[in-house]
Length: 116
Length: 113
Image (cartoon, rainbow over all chains, first blue to last red; front, top):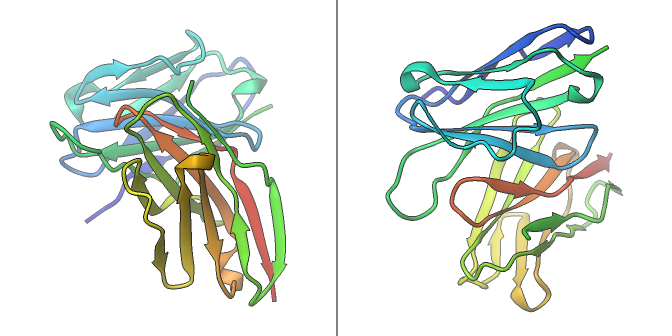
């Protein structure tokens, strides 16, 4: 079974440009999460989709970040315009939907974003 | 507030040494889950263990062991007889609502031959 995949693995852009990150969750996983790790700090939650709906986007830093999950399959995270402080590693995770109990999250390899 | 603290930023040991990675957490919830993940140089986060707040039994898996103590809000991770392949960044995490996870800053472990 394929795991969570993310594209690209690395992206280097200039300040002010736009970048779109993509995440393909494990097939059949309704939950999809975005996290990021900035400058060697903790990994921070950004948002959570259940299918195509945003369940929780409390971690999104500002309105330069836009996440979508059309059709409830893959998700994109767009940063527009990118700022220097957006540099970091963006992780995606997915999990199955369960009515109760813990949804174990499976993480992708991350996308390393560098904004110059 | 939920918070995870990994006070050790970097640890360096020589192969075959034992090493303990510390994790201290804060939460007001009575039900919560604690995790350890490994991030090898390849970048992906590899799940190691999950414990729920009602199960304080320590766990051993091969050279890995975990010590969960609610009295001190700690969930420490020990690697016995470390190997070079154990070199990675290790993250401790806390989940309270079954969805968003709160991670610590990570501890970079380097095991030298």
